[in-house]
Image (cartoon, rainbow, N blue to C red; front, side, top):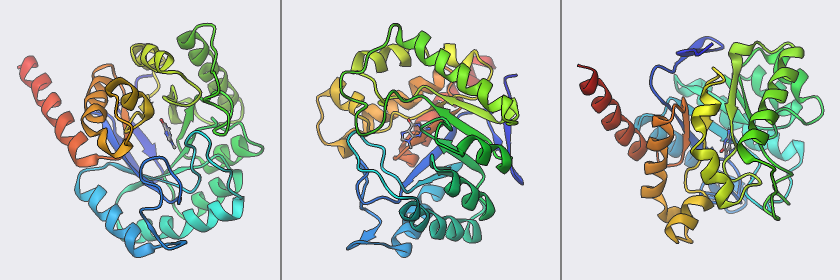
Length: 287
Ligand code: 9MG
């Protein structure tokens, strides 16, 4: 199945080269950029607009918006809070920009409302395991990203354990994929994601990273999100997540080399430049 493009509603996502998904956190408490779109306790549409405009100018192919923080230890949000954060910004993007919008949610009602308002893709860190999510995603007809997470954000970093992290994560995604197909989601609409940092130690993350090609071998586009995450901080000894740019860009290129189709990143411009240089060198090698 190794598709070079993905149909997302009325648009097509080109996957003949790595696509860049720019992160827009609509939360006051996300791990790296939480709160940057807030004026006091209120989400500011004008601040969001500035950030989204920049991400698109910098070369993002997809804008990923989310109203729930899933950083380790994050507090849960209500459905209404998520709807209030996501829907107005989704409407803003769809009405102003010609781009693909992915909605980062695990909540069925958010999936349904976001689909009605023009979202192009569902990105679910819980791989459609919440009640009603798989049905909502199937009815939407949109592509879905199924991510692996052990436990829940509140508890996931308390001593995660695997028999064999690669085998276990591959098996989980294969089983979720089959459930999706049984629920009526077309196989061509499924994106897989090993879920870096979600219930994994540094050793688990690095082992999985080196096995990205095994996820790619499934024939599904693979999404990799390592941007500014703790694994980069642990490798480099950098506590402040906003100072993890170089490690993040490096890992994005390494993920792309291993076959990742979509890179979920905070630093769009820098990642795109690095990917562009790498792509140019591949083309030169083939000349
Ligand atoms: C929402 N979110 C945070 N990290 C992520 C990751 O690594 N992958 C995906 N698909 N979503 C993520």
